[in-house]
Image (cartoon, rainbow, N blue to C red):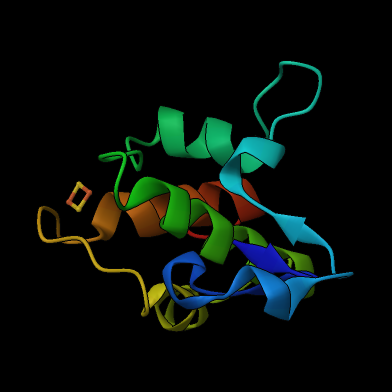
Length: 105
Ligand code: FES
């Protein structure tokens, strides 16, 4: 999730610690029923994996793109480093973030 635009682990954040702050979850990325550019890129580039890792990947990427709209691949890797997936090599996920940012191959 994002707290005031900063990625945080929802599983280790106590609700009272974010009182009065802007809390965003993956459900908030879509507007008026339309998925966001980042969500569309995950769909089109096959970055969307399972329901356990994808929300975290999306919110970590969203936080990165808000502060750095055109990140390098190493910056994307660093931003996603706290989100684990045991099923992939992360290639499609990183390519999805690059597509949303308009960078990469
Ligand atoms: S696809 Fe989600 S943890 Fe591997």
